[in-house]
Length: 329
Image 1 (cartoon, rainbow, N blue to C red):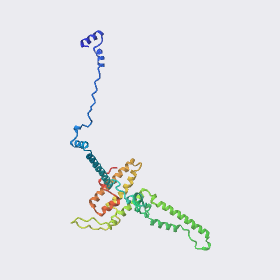
Image 2: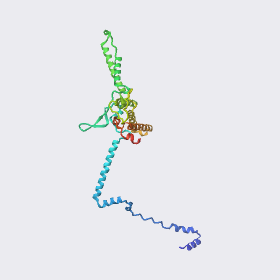
Image 3: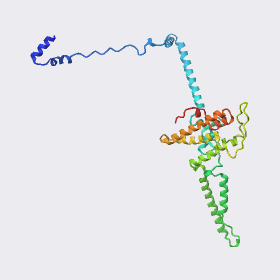
Image 4: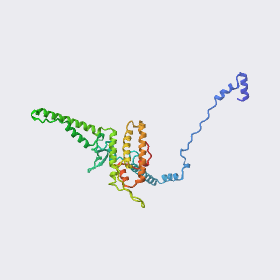
């Protein structure tokens, strides 16, 4: 229909031009969809020369390609094995490598057998490793000798007095009193042993015992008699030996050992079922790890290669991760 015919029809029918044009617009066919592309997702033309050479070898020399794949698999397996060995020697940035001395912090030197460290006996069977014990120390900063002396004195003080006039003494009554005294003393000794046992001590008492053990184990008042000092550089005078007024409580290795004991307590709490909610101790644990890291860097700079440095790392199980790796908690 031409435009003139459409205009004439519009005038005769009394409708507008747009009303007559609307049906024509609605009946217009929809635009055809574009044909799907049949080209591959990876274009061969965009491959590099190296990839083209690999493809050529894979298609034309399958035996050579199989050898290349086998060599690559062996190389990857070896790299994974080396990475695992390096990670095991690198240790954890918080725990390092757990040693018997560090594990004994959990019981303050009371347990004699390890729960996580095993050794091989003569028959090749794994057996728990022995832990360094310190059974002489008891709760409330007591020692076993002090407890024994107090028990013996209490026995003598609570013992019934013997009547000097043996004529007026009833043998049956006296024997009964002595028997009751022995029973009361036995119960009192059991109660004192329970009270003074480190198994019933709180974390504060165990930490005090562990501090004393760290001072005795790594204090320079003991290690200087066994370990040789680091030799001086040529041209420097020999170190002047100073007399100590008491046990060494401030050297770097002692401070590092005490920090390791505190870090172990907080880390075990943090790794518990509800440790992720303890934001306050998370911050404390991070601060202690960074403080130990600074002391280790100072010790490495001053005593690296010396017997003091090696003895501290061996005793506490500290690896390079504890002072070189970023602390992520």
